[in-house]
Image (cartoon, rainbow, N blue to C red; front, side, top):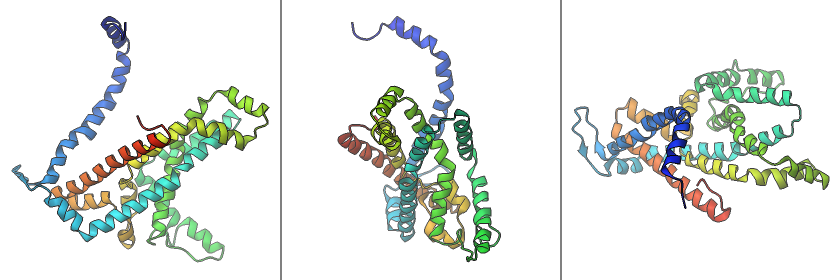
Length: 303
């Protein structure tokens, strides 16, 4: 007999009611903020009207979007900033998890973990304030140290090149500890006897990491990388919005800030929706494309 009888399924479902109730808030959140807004995407193909009498215009707003010189600059900024964040920051949680796995003192490990997880719970308003105070030209702690060392102050926040690196390192500081959690969990699942056998065979620390730990956590690495690529067009609105200024606007204006400015500030809701829909479609294509490529090369993907 294949499958399970209906009575057993009903009994298991009743036993799992507390788990379903715990899952319910997350499902409601997804429904309200992820699925319901999909219906609003139709606005990209209409002319918005406060009276509710929308006019179907087809691809008009997309044509305007792609012909805009500002959109090309915004798209390039988004790709550069997202690319820097993903390809520089992606290995960092893995390295941190490998380092934590080698810490033998449990008290020290828990203390370090608590400290590095803390920035994840800070809002970007707070983090932006911290980095502005650290990096400001005249009063920033970093520039004061540079001055004491006989060096010139550097405009980290108003230089069009350095501001992108500020985004990268502030994102790293905020997320490296939290992102390492999945890798730490994957490392904990590795059978200790495998490491013991490797030690008996004379394998050193780096050899064990290379031959045992990294292959064991590879599925986790692949999955997270694919999901990160799905958010490639999301360069971090909260971070950019709180750290950007007029001096660097041309190099940090990304799709999200452009949508915010065109939609909420200029009132061009249909045009802003078209830009947002373009971003979402690109993210979906990246997820599927990376998943298929990963399945062919490594045999592992998101599903």
